[in-house]
Image 1 (cartoon, rainbow, N blue to C red):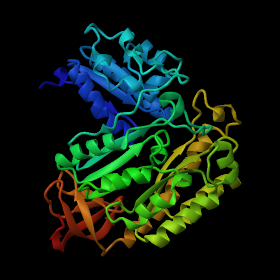
Image 2: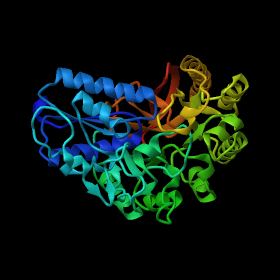
Image 3: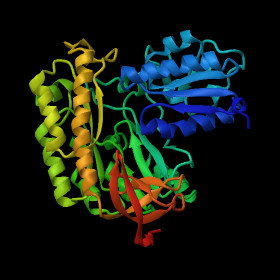
Image 4: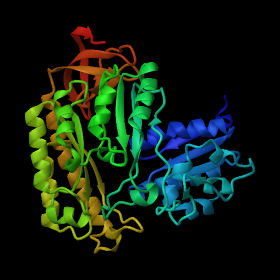
Length: 435
């Protein structure tokens, strides 16, 4: 099929968007929207929105024959800006519906009325794309495509917290979860097509089931009843890791020893002003407990540099958290004000200083990660081989590169060698193929 005759989906941002992108592709294809480019955008930072705008402008300029559609969080928050460019806009809750892409095939222009369809009582016509005061439609699990060894499985969307820096609730509304039964069925699809690892993802994954009486631990236990070989969890709020989930993270071999925490800062005053629900000592204590129970666990964390009112001492506390919480996989970015959030109205530290502090955090995190990677040398581990046959990840999420190719999508026993930048060399261990 020629490039212009197919539906192209360009995903920005989080793993949930990657999972939902496959539903977008299926819906647009079912609508017969050949020659359509759908940009599934992100709005977690102003840089993410800038990248989406840039990509849309380029497509409109270089692909005049294509129908250009923008969906995702940036589309919800900046609908009029994308429409002014000449793109169509589809709201987050409508992006998985075929009717959203059954527009007339004329040149790009303002969105048709199809994206304003009533969806379970939520009308897509508020300043942020959705009327947040009305009931929201239930969430359908989103499963990424079959083109990767790992399957991203979106099980939850939205957030019911009110962190002062975050625009996600404006773009996605209150937290909603898929049913356990629906998630299990989606996981069966991934397993049936041969994917060896499932990654659970969501906007606020740890809140899974709050709207239905279930819990993330209950969902994990249901998935482990399937022949799942590797189950990985994406970002978790530290205050929502209860004893049941803690036990699964530390005692279940098929739950990968890789815990990514939504920490955001390492200073209590900043955490308070962010309206986070944990304090610095809580994060450090949780990591200590996790590693005491399962020493191989690798810790990741989201961190924001340059939050409003952050002074040198407050920043130093966040900088020190990298070592105090043994963070080896840092997702670090400078604060950027998001319209409609409380933090945007607080005294700002300035973008230049925020970028400088983010760079210092990244440098400190790289030093700790490299020490951790160097300490892996000589160890044997199971590696999930990606489709290229040479790259993949260990259970603890260390990035590995094989000396000799192995069967794509296989799980092999390897011995870890020297570090090369952000990759670890690996060679097949004497025990060979694990599965």
